[in-house]
Length: 279
Image 1: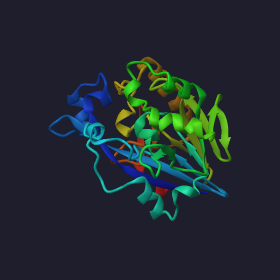
Image 2 (image 1 turned 135 degrees about the horizontal axis):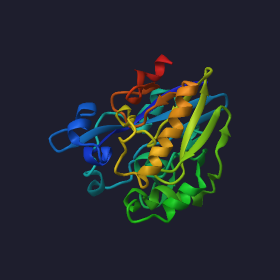
Image 3 (image 1 turned 90 degrees about the vertical axis):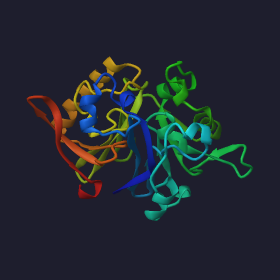
Image 4 (image 1 turned 180 degrees about the vertical axis):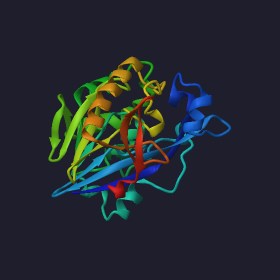
């Protein structure tokens, strides 16, 4: 098995939204912002190469949205999904499986592309089976008013219409060497992949924990629909992560790719940070 980090670019989000009730005087020390209170975040996906399967976990923002939409997010960096796949020697047609942790636009926007006519849509990964949880799909296609702006129909409905969507009901093995667990605080039934890699467990954190700065218990995004459930989610995850020495792989942390955890007098904290290539 090989693991490849897949950068799809960076975007900016309001620091207050990303850190919820935590005062700026605290969070800006852990994750700096610019003069407009915007923090820069990665959209770092993961490619799992395992025998005859090539599994992509999340796929970034995509390129379908117009300038009016994108100007809110200040896209930056030289990376793209296509460029990163090409650098690893792959193209979109090679992907056999796409795991979508959840259906917010910055995690699944690359799933769908415009057809040649520039009006209709097609699968960006035509030979792949797309996996997400049934509860997340139902949640995303019947959104509440608070989350509605994050669920874009053009990113979601064409997957089902293609007939290549697999909806998962339970935790457990999804693919060889990849188990999933479901968490419900950020959004409903977020899929968190656990990858068996060289005898270690690498966990793709998605928005269960966007960055190392979110490791302290109360550091929870204002985007989370059920922050008290997120507290329970984090507690459940921490117990397993410390006991089993999980490696955390961060999707949004601009500065840290991976980390391990340990228990301290102040609670769970980062034990060490490192790059995926160092595992």
